[in-house]
Length: 231
Image (cartoon, rainbow, N blue to C red):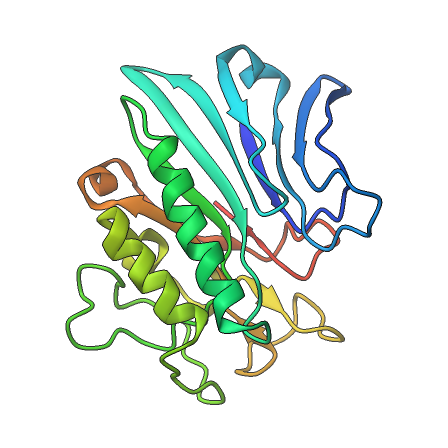
């Protein structure tokens, strides 16, 4: 699998260094203070793609952007890591508000794609959400809808940005839909609700969805993480 840019979340790395490792460009975004970093985001850019880097913004430990030259313009990637649902609603709401502002700030003459761990269980596509969430979501009967959940904040973000949860518009088997396995569960285990989740998503403006050919998860490339790569 040839990956030009790998978006990172939950790096737990303090500070915002930029450095090379065996030709790969690593861009990290984290807190500067001495306290332990529980979040942290960033990018790893392949050697053959480094020359296409136009710029980057290390906004915080929960969001950063990378601008890449592509044919016909500039592609902006935003990597992000949301607070989990156990945190206060105001904290989570402020994060999603900040993300919407940051995404608008990063707009360029080309698509802006937001990729990350939104800690949002979509449950299903409800009536009236057809333009925001597709039919292909991983259904977990043990999860219940809540008006204050990250799911609803994610839907609100999409409405604000006139975007959609792009990965839910492509039909795949559960093994290529789930993005997370619970602690103590092997990534290759049989997929059972409660042990696997769909928490990571890709947000794309509706007018750029025509450029997205497919999105799927790979359980073969979990990189010592409880999350799977989303391609």
